[in-house]
Image 1: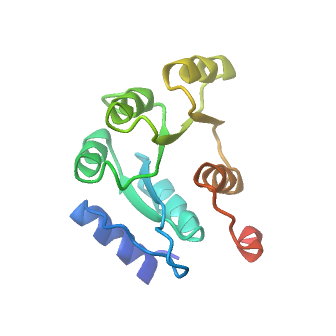
Image 2: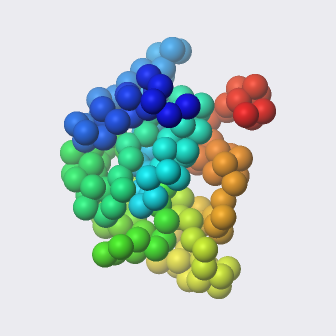
Length: 159
């Protein structure tokens, strides 16, 4: 639902590039996901979907934005979701650099490449979850839920 309060909140987070640990309704810290996606329409779609999980989403449309957000929030970000193919630097290179600061950072990499290329990627970024594109919303939703240890409400899965 573009233009809604949720989108306005996410856009504010990206403009300020700062995340304060937010509490969920049950008092637990909400997870934060840094999403690097160069396609604005796809970014909006993913951010809305991830909102159903109750996570905070930081959106970066390019590598420079991702590094700017990371510099201000390295210990607030729980999960990096990025395409392997990015302009200027690969998603693998970004993940490796972020892991120098945060070896425990969870990572999901997506790619249209062949399975062999994804397997090579797994050697570069150990422990990263690999998803072959096109990735359905449900597949990504489940992967992120799994990586963050979230249990979404059953009614959300019907969307």
